Image (tube, rainbow, N blue to C red; front, top):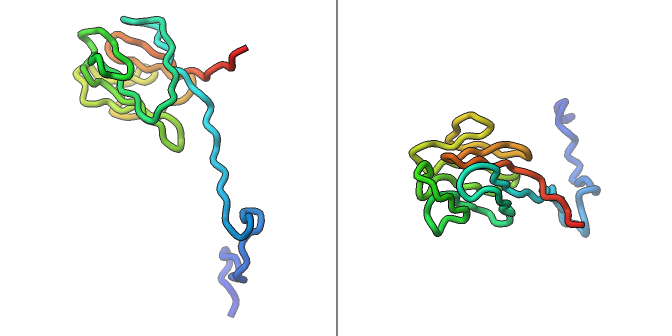
Length: 131
């Protein structure tokens, strides 16, 4: 009996290009280093390196990025690093989170996106190498 079309024959042989010493290897895509640049609002201008898995933005002093504004909730939003890059999530803030001018509950972030939290405006930018 032959194998159905569209199904590779089962010969028991694995694709050798993905094996090293009989163990499959996976190459992770290296994410470009990013910086969150605050361009407007209390505390601007400033750059914040995105170098941890979760960054909380809010009015609270213990927030990773503290914005001293009555328009910003104590814990307003969280930036989270995942396999595909960073995303933002609104932490049930009073005034919402805006990515590129649109209100979002959560959204992926890409280089050059704008992020508005209260009266603070941030731009996600690739980190330029020193020198």
